Image (tube, rainbow, N blue to C red; front, side):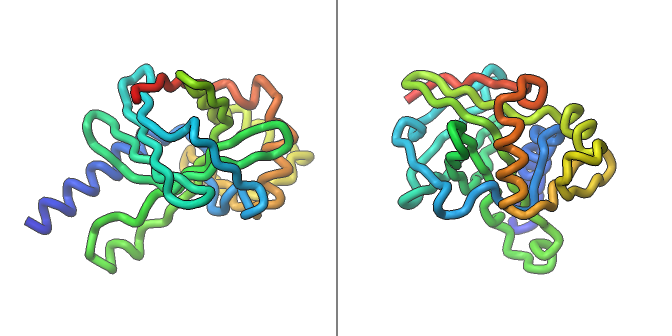
Length: 187
């Protein structure tokens, strides 16, 4: 039974990773405690055009628990709304997996995922940074943001302060943020 549960969790983990494969991941968060905001408007269940279900639950003064379900397979994330200048971002980080194998868990490295957010009563606009744009920008010497490239994935290794400066600098750039999803409120 434990093997079946571990196998099932691994499949869920792989589905989520594949879903976010083109996404930009970071080893560090986009926020400090001072940058966090909380909006009750985000709490509830939302659905995107692929019928993925996003359920945001209050999980503290300035945090949410996000249950993201893709094809009926849920995964749980710690989530924070981050206010940088006039912009709102969502920082998601995977919750500890329910696998009790400590050796296996030592191999997993969590990563933060950032999206620019606009929250309305009946919808949210969730916009990811464009992978191609970021790759081109990072190869330009003026970008000055530390990262690693593993296969085709970009892993940002910059500290929070540098991440904030970078995301704030390009937050209004239509080429940087063009991978938009609209979440529609379900409840």
